[in-house]
Image (cartoon, rainbow, N blue to C red; front, side):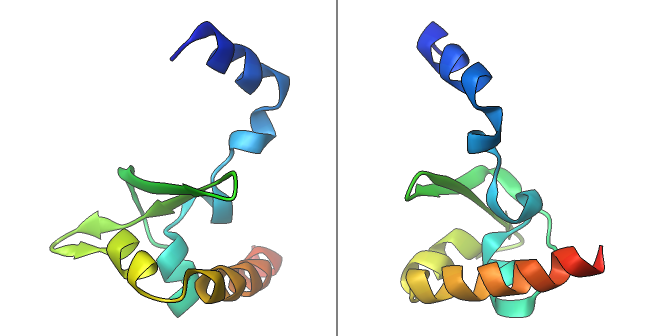
Length: 87
C-alpha cells in the first residue's frame, strides 16, 4: 500500500467499506442471506467493493460474473435494505 493510498483512505474511509456489510454479494442477491466471505475473492465494480464466498468448490464470484451482474446488484440492494431493517 502506498502513501497515496493511505492518504486517500484516511480522507474518506466510508468510501472503501464493502457492500452489504461485508457479506457475500451473491448470497445477498440470490438467497437474501448473510454468508461469510473469502477476503481474497472480491470485485471492485463501479468504484464499490463486493466480497464473495469461495470454499468447498463454490466460488460465488464466478457465478456473479456468469449471470446478469446488474440484475444481481439490484436484487442484492433490495434484499440488503430488507435485511438491514430487521437488524
